[in-house]
Length: 262
Image (cartoon, rainbow, N blue to C red):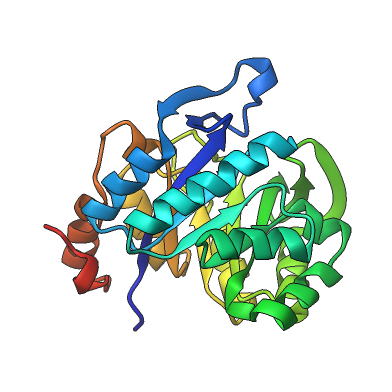
């Protein structure tokens, strides 16, 4: 069995890491400031994080430049793969982030509006660099729909079907975000994670809802995810990355030993 990855996520707004609940919006006062993204990245690098995900949740050209500078600073000091998402609309945007030091780029709303961007990115940079992030909202016991623009946009698409199509277009990885669970710390949506993991032939990263170590083990075991992504439990010091890895290893879930600190 391949080793499972533990991935801290940094939501960056105005150059600072923030945290919301169920995609809380900055304009509604729904974000809590956490700290400097470079400082946090260095902390998680020291703890043995397998990767780091940065989501730029602001959209102006000036703020995008700030994000490039953040990635450059982190990449020069950290030795783990970096994924960057948020506001990436074109091949040029992808190239800018990869040149800054990112290993992967994550696209969401842009992929929904123009699925050919997935194919073009995979052809130019390789599928291994292209991540499609899917924000899924449960609307019935056995039905999830895709939302865009941080839960503000209706798409009319079924989440599982969209995951299949994204991989067919060339996505090398899926980050599956549960809107309902995001920031609640009540656990991942195991069912949608399992369904997507069984349908696609690429790694699936579970996102949204991590509240304790058991939640992470459950989504890797029952949800069949390849990696767990979390924010709040790391940012506010409830657990370290190596706490997670030690717990998973004791459960018989393989983790990367070369990134295990404890």
